[in-house]
Amino acid sequence: MQLNLFGWAAIALLVLAGAGIGYGGSRLIDFPRGPGIAGGALAVLASLLVLDRRRHARLSDPRAPHR
Image 1: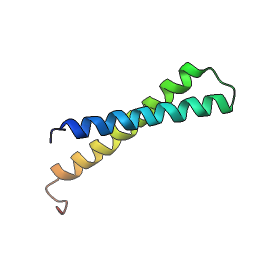
Image 2: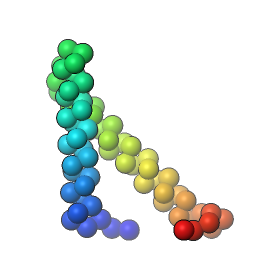
Image 3: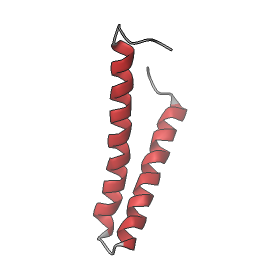
């Protein structure tokens, strides 16, 4: 399945939201801003990657019921 423009825009917005949460968290605990921003963005990307891999594995399993 390929992403269209709206799918890529949704991913970009989620990554930006993760970066914002990382920035806010780093300010809250008085941590350097750069690693907090990068960590938040990477956490969102890692979560999306894990969810996509699980979905792909479920779709390619011939024993799994398809919905």
